[in-house]
Amino acid sequence: MKSLKYAILGLLCRHPMTGYEIAKEFNFELAEFWYANHSQIYPELKQLNEEGLVNYDIEISGEILESKRYTITEKGHSDFIKWLHKDEKIQKTPKDVFRLRMYFSGNLDMETRIHLLENQRMQHYKRLNSLKKTFEQYPEVPPRNSDRFGDFIVLRGAIMRQENIIAWIDECIGYSKEDAGE
Amino acid sequence: MKSLKYAILGLLCRHPMTGYEIAKEFNFELAEFWYANHSQIYPELKQLNEEGLVNYDIEISGEILESKRYTITEKGHSDFIKWLHKDEKIQKTPKDVFRLRMYFSGNLDMETRIHLLENQRMQHYKRLNSLKKTFEQYPEVPPRNSDRFGDFIVLRGAIMRQENIIAWIDECIGYSKEDAGE
DNA sequence: TTAAACATGTAAGCTGTTACATGATTTA
DNA sequence: TAAATCATGTAACAGCTTACATGTTTAA
Image 1: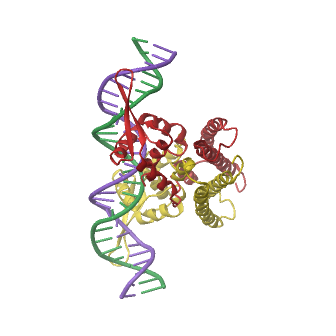
Image 2: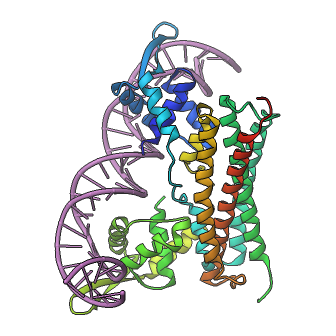
Image 3: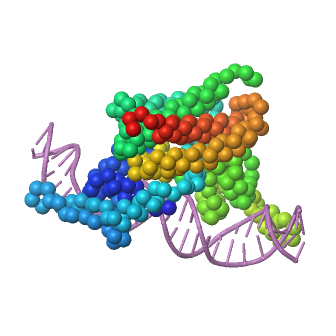
């Protein structure tokens, strides 16, 4: 699949970055649909460089501290654009440990079941609020050809996804609390 | 995390199964939130047996063909129940290659963007319909303490998730088609 | 002066996928 | 009799996480 490769190339299309900066992006903004640790990013950048898809210049902060600022090459850019154009099969539904748990919830008493659901609900609600806060930065839909448009639609998707999970949990709580048939 | 372990133990709580049957479950019904190939399941069963969490009896089909029917032990059962009771932090949002692509969609012309979105929409719509068909097996909410209740709520969750993805894609198509500001 | 942030890398280990490997039984 | 399904396993590899390893610079 090599998605990490394209995630990095896509970021470098915007502007040159260091590995450290890429890692930060992957753990903040992008984290709603992609992420990677620096231990994965540095070796990947090294390989992309060997493949001629990126170059780097060394910058010095202070007296000694070096950082490599990576720039995408023409080949890297055309590789990325080619990938971006491809139709793809929808991916397998992601694994979900909590749903696995709920699948087996017949083994739990109602009290525990509702407790687990409410605990998850609370956590998802917190995440939703933090996403909504970020969303306030977009008082209107950004221009369709700007980078911010991409940011906007995936953020909107993250909010919708979060709201949907909460709606599902609420349904589950509702079913669990119903008295009918007992 | 060892989730595969508990996924298997959970299934064996319902009734004894062979590795082959577990693999089938993981690739059909459960596949909406969990899956595993036989190449992962057989070694895992072997290990669970070594840990004393499952036992097996050998059955013969025809003249030669052997299969191992696994039964959960008391220790396995209590291990599973303990796991099932644990509160857990919500997991990281799963990686999503299509969202990654859309994040970078500023690099695509409108026609391609809409084409990609509509292609995904079509595929998600198909999956939704197949889920809805399965859902017809549940004319009403199954009893809260039956295994079928777990099946029901995760299936309901899968449908909601699928509808939500389609709603997001529709929003994206809408934004992409708008003429304002051009 | 100390904690946080900047900055880059490697190694070990776990999870999961694809391919390799073999063979029996049932159904069309 | 051929294809699909039943049935079990191992091996190689890819992807990712956690820990190891080191040191600088900035801000409180």
